[in-house]
Image (tube, rainbow, N blue to C red; front, top):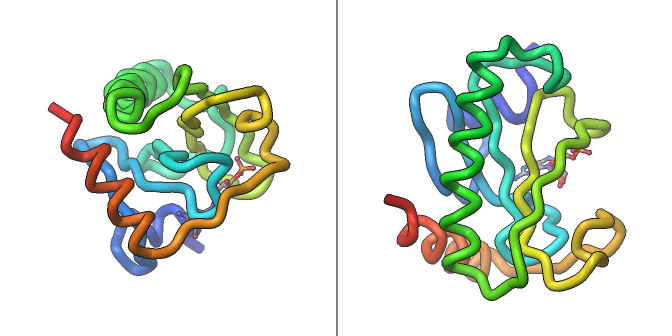
Amino acid sequence: MPSIFTKIITGEIPCYKIAEDADNFAFLDINPNAQGHTLCVPKKEVDKILDMDEAAYMKLMAFSRKVGRAIEAAIPCKRVGMSVIGLEVPHVHVHLIPLQSMQNATFQHKVSMTPEEFENTASKIRKHLK
Ligand code: 5GP
C-alpha cells in the first residue's frame, strides 16, 4: 500500500507544494513546528534514511539544501534546521524548519495556520527557488 507521502506526490492527497525534481518532492508540513516547516521526500519509498542507496541519499541532501536555502531567504528566522525522525510516517523525509529558538526544533510546540497562510508561505518560498 502506498505511503501517505506517495499519495501526496502522485496528487491523490493535496499539499502545499514547494518543489519537485526527478527524484524528490517538497511540500509544507501540515502540522508545522514553525511557519515554513517543509518536508523533502524521495519519490522512491524507503522507510529509513540510512537504508537509502548512497546516490539517492546524496540527491535528497542536495535537493534539501536547495529548498532549505529558499526557506531561509523567504521566512524570517535565525537559520533553517534540518531533522530526520520518521517515527510517524515510514517514508523517508527531511524536515526543514525555520528556527527562532530551540523550541522550534522540539516537535512539541506547533503553530496553527489557515489554508491562506499555508498558500502564501508556499508561494513566498517558491519565489526564492532558482
Ligand atoms: P515523523 O515521521 O518525522 O515523526 O513526522 C512526520 C511528519 O509528517 C509530521 O511532522 C506530520 O505533521 C507530517 N505529516 C503527516 N501527515 C501529513 C500529511 O498528510 N500532509 C502533510 N503535509 N504532512 C503530513
